[in-house]
Image 1 (cartoon, rainbow, N blue to C red):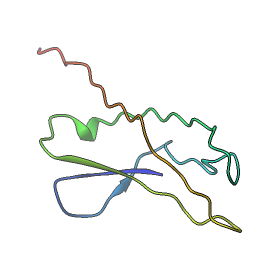
Image 2 (tube, helix red, strand yellow; image 1 turned 120 degrees about the vertical axis):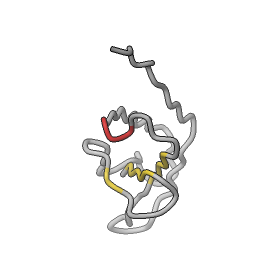
Image 3 (spheres, rainbow, N blue to C red; image 1 turned 180 degrees about the horizontal axis):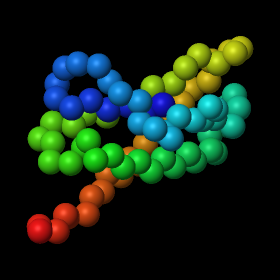
Length: 80
């Protein structure tokens, strides 16, 4: 799951549509790429926006999940 919070404390909030039920292809196989694209109006003009990525326990043996190649982009807003 992808979660965020605004500021350095407080509860994290789930990003809608960013939950991945199974982020792996199986034990010992590191081939699955799981892109997540998320946008929220709550993030606009925030000086301190924190994200975290969490996984949950597997039904049997746990699998290693790696997170890399993270890209965060934005588009400047037009002033009205």
